[in-house]
Length: 288
Length: 288
Image 1 (tube, each protein chain N blue to C red):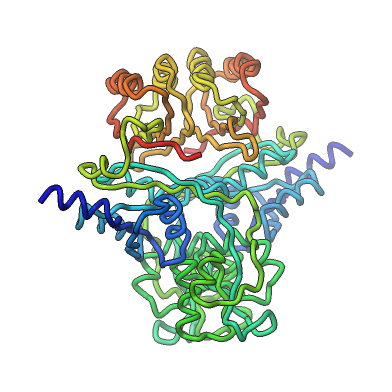
Image 2: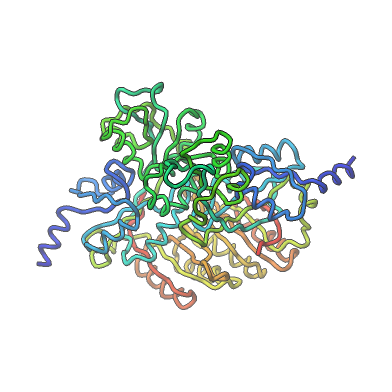
């Protein structure tokens, strides 16, 4: 039975994402698992993505965690921290938005543009320059294009990836309409810890995501970072967050990279007695 | 002339904000400068807020910098870093949103809800539970209410502060519709460095915001934090950001608190040779 389970798991990966087919999550999943057979499970919310993994331990979650423009997605960090999943990979995706409409619509016939609020924000200059277009929120970038195509909504445009526009038979009015061309989103791949070894080889890992809390005390963070440096562990990200209701305590989300898995594990053992609760969110291979 | 300038500056403060009267920026400005006569300069964008200060050195900028739900406003950090202003104060505001409409409209007659994208995101559960309401983006929370009131737009609701709803004669359908009740926004007060002494007494400062860059090298951050701890300087926030185009370098935005201004200044002198460019964004009194 175990062998069969293992086989079916490896044969066809089932990836839960927030959003529709053609969304940036879908694109990221196909880039990350290039050449593999995927079944994408489209969820309405990030909570639903984690529920999918809870309900079926063979499901893998793929979710955005930070963006060069919008910053860290704190809500997703929180969901990840509270979930029973472990991070097994990361992927970085260059985000490009296009504006698209039904094939028989055009610039002079569209008056509304629908998209996810973050995508609308990332195209603010474009929207300001096209002030006759009313910006309407949608749950998802690709979902907005799909909805317009399915319901043949003349006069409405969507902001989404050009892949999604093509997928739903929409006409691209203009591509690369995002304000900042250095718009990258980092995605994390997470799964049930029991299944982690099917998705990544731990011995090839060179990066880890940690979260720990520290009392607000002079030098407490410097001690932790000093110990990590003694063990030749590199920091690639650090972010402090106040803990709501605990005014003098902070959560630290830290990403580290390492050459030597054993050395990294020893460094975690060395800092554990000095922090108030540490959770390894996952160990994985760094994305280039 | 100088005395007259000083007098007029103290007599009536001119505060540039992003948004309209009644917006959270307006509320934050009036809470921070309680009891003082204020003239609010409403700007469309945060860029315009800094332009106001550039054009008239007596103007003071007030801008949101982070939110407990949405995280750091990276764009505003960047604007602040590139600006010639200095931070002279901070304010923390509890954010509560209401939904409001024209007095003769009601739940059964409204079908659209307009607001700033961040406000819409902060009321996501409410919007999901009221899926018949179409969420439409606006430049500003209070501006959405103002627009509906001025143009007597029946069928449209706005999400804004209850103060804005009242200011524009709107009827509050429901108050406190934000998902998370621990929704706080931190605002910074910034002005021309020449005018800083008119706004805050440096000797009363106990907090500073810094930004510096470091090469990606094992232990470089730990050295900086260790030195700060030797000088009894507390960290209240740290956030790393990759520098676009410089793959191995990071910017660190750090907030520190101190009891002794001289000691703090000495600590800055001590870390300066070890960082690659440091900028003191400002020294000010911590908000409680």
